Length: 396
Ligand code: FAS
Ligand code: PHB
Image (cartoon, rainbow, N blue to C red; front, side, top):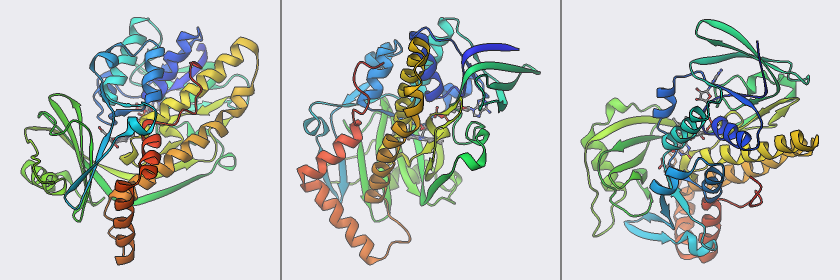
């Protein structure tokens, strides 16, 4: 039997960021992760950190490499009808920026700081149950090294992603979920080739959406809209590069090609739980919500959740106040729904919906033309993309 103040299930961005924020406040936690360290550190996912996320990671002490290696971006480029339209996001948001820094690197930095501090982080440790959430001493039971261990805590955080047990441990009559499944998916590639752009390119083309992101001056990350039933086996390197070049074409621009080192297809959904709390069990990140990646919100929402949770738990341990804990779910869900709408809006603005009729397609063309020509529309896109400052500065 083990005991701690805060038991955290999941060593993704949500669980690891929370553990670090709590450590800074002197609050003990234990992190339980089902997969190996190598697996979680290699899992290729998000690439864009909002302004707030960058600040949180730096202020928590885990942002040194991010400051050295992260690529600060001041804008993005929209492309459609073979024309390029830059959205100067910093100009529209009082200088706020985003940072290109892979989720893999965020996870590595947070694991390293946890391990260096000798704080409990168990890999290959799968939580099999969460019980007593409606009491003041909930228990996480987990398997590790062939033994079953009970971890007793004051609080349990389900930071265990969409398929974790956190959300499933809330009684069905205490939680509901709503979702939207999109009729397309993303084929994502990682390639050892310098980016062909200084800032991200989001392209709408009759064949479908395409995006050019990056991970470093020598590694590019690109995406193609495909059918959800498609298979990476149908996509040779040559076919991928050819389709990317076609969909992002604009006069005078060439797409550099090179060795593709990773290919994967990710389906797209929006998903939101009705509550992020049941007694002493709290949900954070993908355990509670999923957004289509077009708005680059997934990881950033996870960090926003745990920043609120860290404040709430600190308030509880410092003063006994439960105010932050009581407000957490509602406050977090306000941001989740704002980000969910923005992600839906960016997705429908830029993807080709196979179920769209001629009227839908005319609306999309009009929306694209409006966004490209209106300062008001670009201000709205920019403030959502760089991240709304709903978490008062200096609260970390
Ligand atoms: P995570 O899923 O990252 O972490 C949860 C952790 O809990 C995992 O390590 C899992 O192994 C562990 N776990 C689960 N069950 C457990 C159990 N029973 N016991 C112990 N541990 C358990 N977002 C973007 O912004 N841009 C993108 O391009 C993008 N691409 C994505 C591609 C894919 C395939 C997926 C699935 C997501 C993508 N996302 C993207 C979203 C992604 O970045 C998430 O928002 C982010 O990982 C959320 O972090 P966490 O909430 O920590 O969940
Ligand atoms: C990425 O770099 O992986 C990335 C960037 C922007 C997005 C989604 C993914 O909207």
